[in-house]
Structures are given as C-alpha cells and as structure tokens.
Image (cartoon, one colour):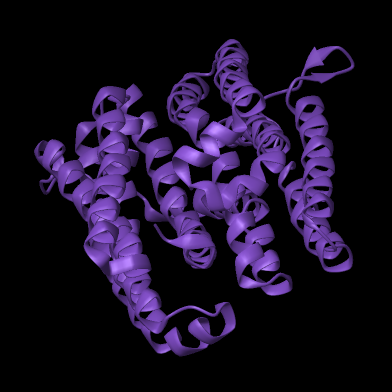
Length: 382
C-alpha cells in the first residue's frame, strides 16, 4: 500500500529508530544484569529502588532527546529526504522507546519470561494492527510511522502495569555508579551491532534513487525477520548467564543450546526464502517488488550469521569480557569504507556485508570458546 518510495522512507525511519533502540537495549541490558544479580540474592528492595530511580532518570532523558530531535527535525528531514511530519512523529516516539526497556529489563532480570514474551508480542501485534488500520484509512507513511509510536505506548503501559508491586520507595539505595560503569561497554556493543544492520540502509538511501532504496529496504526487512525471529533467545540467555556468573559458575552449555536454537529458527526461515521467495514477496509487498526475490535468500544468510554474532556478544557481556568490542568497531568502520568505495549495485553491498559478518563470526567463535583447546577464562576483561 505504500509503494517503493514509501518503503524507502519507512526503511530510513526504521533505521533511525534502530539507532534510538541502542539506548533502549542499553537500558534493558544494564538493568537486567543488576536485577538478575539482586534476584539471585533475593534482594527485592534493591530491585524496587532501581526500578523507581531508573524511571525518573529515563523520563528526563526522553524529554531532552525529544526536544533535541524537534530542534534538528528540519536538518534530518532534508538530509534523509523525509517529510518533516514523519520526523516529528519519531521525536514523539523517543520517550516511550526509552521507557519500555525499564519494565523489560526488570522482567528479564527476574526471569519472568512469560510476561516478557507477552510484552514483546503485544508490541509487534500493535505495530501491525495500528499501522495497517492507519495506512488503510489513507494516512500513508504517516500512519505507518505513528503505528510504531502507538505500539511503544501500549507496551509501556502494559509493562508498568504487570510490575506495579515493585513501584514503591525503599530504604535501600543502589549504587548508580556501578550501573553507569557497566552501561558503557553495553552501549558500545549495541551501537556497533545496530550500526552494522543500519549503515547499509542509510548509505543505499544516499547513493541510490528513491525507488531502488525502497527495493533495498524491502528485502533488508525480510532479512531482518531472520534475525528478529531468534532475537528473544538473547533475553533468556543473558540473565541466566549473569546469575550463574554472579554465583561463581559458568554456563557455556546454555550458550551452545542458544546457538543451536538460533540455527534451527534461522534455517527454517531460510528454507522458506529459498523455496518460496516470490510468494513471500507477493504476500508482504506486492507484485511491484518481485524483482527483489533474488536478493532475499542471500540477505537472509547474512542476518543468520549476524544472529550468531549477536548471541556471542551478549554472552561475553554477561560474563564481563569486553575485548571483542574492538573487533565490532573495526567491523563497522570496514563496512563504511567498503560501501563508500563499492556501491555499484546491490550485489556489491550484499557481498561486503556477507564477507564482513562471516569474518566477525569466525573471530567471535574463537574468542568465546577455545584457546589452545580450552574454554577461555570467563573472568578475563579489558
């Protein structure tokens, strides 16, 4: 219903939101780590204190970023060729994007995966329903983008409702310095990982015309389905690994199970892309996009490899090992350089992404698992 140009705009909007989601996942990951540690010690007072104080600080941060985005809205609209109203909607979304992970970090830390899963499903369902209805009513790209805003608002309300028993003042005070100290490596990891699957969209939007950018955004979205389908496994792995580490144990067995599950989910999706690419494109985008079918499967493979890197990165974060961050930074720098030099067609872009993520995966596997035939010491760090 949007057309190639509309999907080009939506692709850029999603990329901007992915960058904002770096802070989203920093908040969630940092909170879940400390909540998991408190949960292992049955320290509910510290959990409540962290919940209340984090909410107050994030509300202030959200307001500041909302105002900054409004002030820069004309610049952003001009650079990315976006309608100014779309940028304003993105600005409105920011505070809720930053509040949602507080509740999710709490649920993840206390290992209430049922309610965490419901929250994620509610967000996804709300995006689809609100977006579909608003686009159908004739609001076009504005409706699609506001559907995202409405979904985060819904998820925020639901998350805080299920955690209302923790919303209380306590005599316990959590040391914020420890939270901030841990947040920095989490921020860098999430930023580098998010940039990997965001830079290509921005560079394609810059170097290709509106229609071609829309085509690229379409098959990139299909590829990301492979990643997001296995994304929830990280939220199970991370708190369990943190809790085991807090108790002086290691949990490489859980990591291996997570990688196997990622393989199963990813291969299932890839088989659909390999055998029925035209049907997938027709159902999700329509006949105008049939020419992208040849890119769907190879881009799906890239996102499967990226899923492995993502899981391995979070495992290392959970046991306070950070040296791999330098490799992720190099990954993004290489992506920028090679795409600036080589962007003749989509095949060049896909080849660059595929080669870089394959090398990154090889490095992460060696770094995480074995050195001289032994599991690497989980207590090593920068």
